[in-house]
Image (cartoon, rainbow, N blue to C red):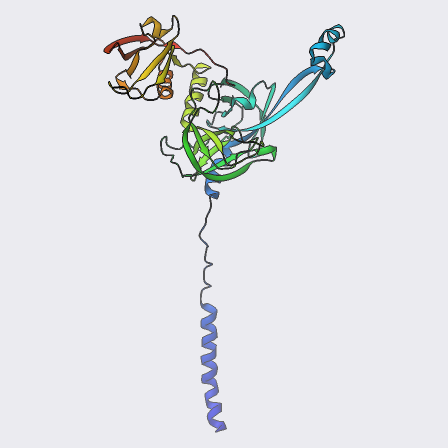
Length: 358
């Protein structure tokens, strides 16, 4: 019995050794990668193009606040005196060209004496104002830096209500921050006085003070809007923020870069919508500016505008935007109905006077 066991030991040992060797040469299983979720790739693409903007201006005021009251003004004028102090503010911007052109909000840099731009890579540089457009609350800055990464622009018209968007900016000056949400509405207007070209994107992505001028991007990191303002009772985010569409912002930038300012067409006519007009759709002419292009073309209050350059008219806002896109000096055909009969008027487009946005 013992002899048989001794004979079997080498066989058992060989089998065990073979098993151990086989286990040793088996390849180590590759680690299983968890599927990635979130928008880190989109942020990585967009964030290098988003900058922080710091502005300062000198504020002069009387030595004593009582000097602002009417009854003390005469006395203060006998003893003049004032003091100056530096006042700072902050905002955000978006690099849109590799040569250093940056888009931001006009209200971010308005009345600033100095503007400093801080990039995501830690570099800082002074910026100069190339031009502003108060009617769209946009401004164009430029910095002299190399190696800038401009943001990619999303195709115009692709954005839909419900799409995911990310707001990137510098809220409260704490540094670059990303918040997420969806597109809540498109084409919002009538929110600000003297802003005839409003076409806001509404989003519930958190936008706070300091985000103004920053980027609103889609889930691929492409620019869809420039964050502009919020609806708030407390000053903080309540989930109702507004951004200027990127295509409008780029049009403003190109006009400012090429012409130094935004030049818009103008007819000098006030129109209002009408309803239940038996002859079809149109706009009611409520007023005509004296000696303006429409007046010189023979347009009268009470006319009904039915088409411009052969295209049927829509809303008053849409017509205003169409006229604004025309070049001053060009000819425009306006079809109207007067006293029940159609007429064709040809006007020479004028240059729209600049309005201050409030």
